[in-house]
Length: 356
Image: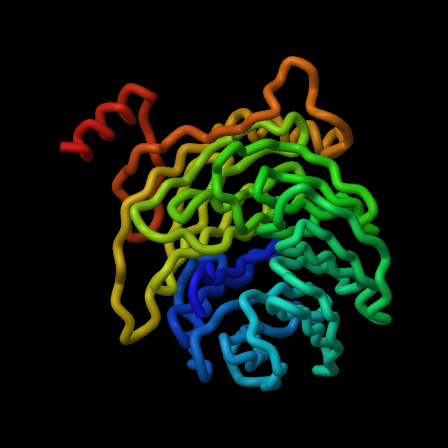
């Protein structure tokens, strides 16, 4: 299967960092990024996720593995009869595997059901696993009750859906070919929040408090926007392929990379951590710049803490509807934790040096 975004999962509990490399499922500890366990699937992995009790993964042939979180012991293996391109999971244990023409729902006890959805492109479950939102290549957004598979509502966008995330404030945030949209919990209303011109968006994740959304932009960048004023709040730019993005606790943002690697970046300080390789695997190195507007992000999160509603209305007057993140210069990365320091002048000097 081609064009699969490198799978990655972190999650608001912050306990695990889950990535993959070909058929290898790689699990690291969330707090210290150290390797915990590795398991090999039957084919190339196209989706990973976590639940309260398991790490879940699906390969390109449609085989789902559920493994014990701490040890990697296999709890369940299922052949889903689908050729998937992605997976989403819920804290409660419900998992959804997405393929071009259908979504297979897997309950916490392993029972399966199937939603026939033409052009299914991306999906997200709420944490309780009670509802699922599915965006399609045709621009439709369907919401279903998971327990009954009953449709709850459907809306339509003017462009294809690329990624979907549940927001703790009670709605979906999704990326399309035109930007970022808000979809009501019943799917009946779609509101355009952020225009991104010709940027190519895909994976999206909302922060623990709902105030921020992270976006995979192109193949080498991850950007953050706030969901109060819809402003660009910073970027991480890489020399290598960026995978799925997934917010952890607080301001920690997880970013998957190709070859089974990943980063944690604290958008409140620009501190960066990397996953350590499992025994027998090569230790890769890479170059990145983490340049997030830490003080502005803290103010956004403080406003939400004190009651400002998230994505509650149209863009405030005097702000632009267009969002074009600047190109970020590269900065050298360390093997464990490092922070990007210096003023704009220092970044420009570094860019000139790298271009020589």
